[in-house]
Image (cartoon, rainbow, N blue to C red; front, side, top):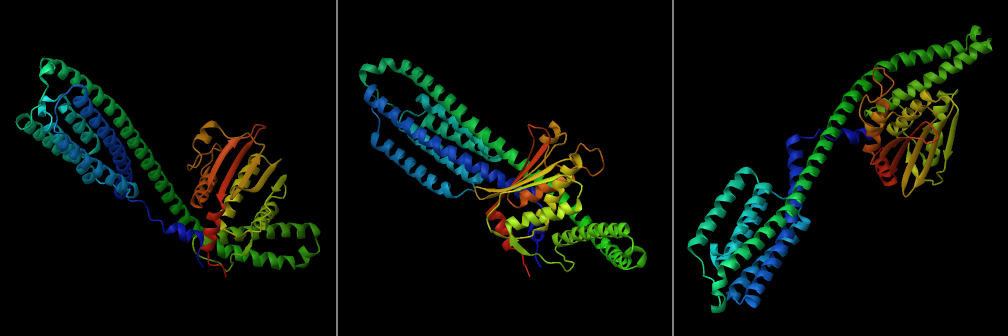
Length: 448
C-alpha cells in the first residue's frame, strides 16, 4: 500500500551545486531578456543618430553599409527574442556570445563613421561594464581584451567622416556635443540596466536561501519520521497487550459489577484505541501498515468523522464545528492531514479549553480549514517565524514541533498555512489546500 509519505520520500535532498546552477540559469535568463530589450533601445538610438547626422548636420555616411549592419542586428535580436522566450536556461557562454554580437555591431558602425574620432566610441565602456556584471571573471577579462583590440583597430582602420564644407569648422564643437550625448546615454543605460540586474541577483539569492531552508527542514522531518516510526514499532506490542488485559478485566466480576470501574475501563479503552490509531497513522505515513486500510468517503464526512474522533479524545473541551462543506467530493482519509488537524486542535485546546472552533469551507476550488481559540494568542516573534521548528512560547523541550509539521504537511500538499491573532482575542490558524492537489495525492494512494 503506497502512502502520501512514499511520494514525499522520493524527494531526495537538494544538491547545493545543482541548485545554485539552476538558480543562476534562471537569473541569467532574466538578464538575457534585459539585454535583448537594451539592444532594441540601441537599435532605435543608432537609427536616430544616423538620421540626425545625415539630415540635420549634413554629414555624409555610407548609408547602405550601415543599414545592412543594423538589419543584421535587428534580425539577430528578433531571433534571440524568439529563442530565449521559450528556452529558460541561459549559460555564461550564451551571454558572452550575445555581448560579442553587440561589440561586433558597434565596431562595424564606428568603422563606417570615423572610428575613434566618433565620440560614440566610448560606448565600448558600456559593453565592458555589462560584461563585468553579467559574465564570469575569466569571460569578463577576455571580453575586455577583445573590446580593447577592437578600439585599437578602429584607431588605425576606419572610413573618415565626410563633413560638408560649411560645417567643417564646427567639428570640435560637434565632437564635444556628441561626447556629452554619449555620456548621458551611457549613464542612463547603466543605471537602468544594472539596477535591473541587481534586482535579479537579489531575487535569485533570496530564492536560493529559501530553497536551502526548506531542504534543511525536510531533512529534519525525515529524521523525526525515522524516530517516530521506530517508536511506533516499539509501542505496538505493549498496546496490544494492554488491549487484551483491558478486555479481560471487563469480563471479571470485580469490574463487571461496579459501574464506576466499568466506566473507567471504557475511558481507558477509548484512549487505547486512539493510541493505536496514532501508531497506525505513523506507520502508514512511513509506508507500513498494521492491518488498517484507508477508506474512501466524502470531504464533508471526512471532516465530521475526524472531528468526532478528536472530540472523543477531548470530551471536556467546549468545541464548536462550522462545516459549510456540501460537496460530495470523494477523498481518502489521509493520515498526515488528519494528524495535522489533531495537532492544531490539541494546541488550541491546551491554551483555550473553554472554547475551540473549527470552520471548514470550500472557496474558489480550495479547502479552507480554520482553527480558532480564545487563548492568549501568538506572540509577535512566534508569528514572524511560523513554520520553523521549536518555535514555541510554551518553554518545554520539543515545543513548536506540531505547528512545524503542520506547515510542512500543508506545503507538501500544495497549500498554505497562515497564523494570526483574532480581533476578539485568541489565535487563529488557517489552512488552504487546493482541491486539485488533494485529489491528485488521493489518486496516488493504493486504496484496498
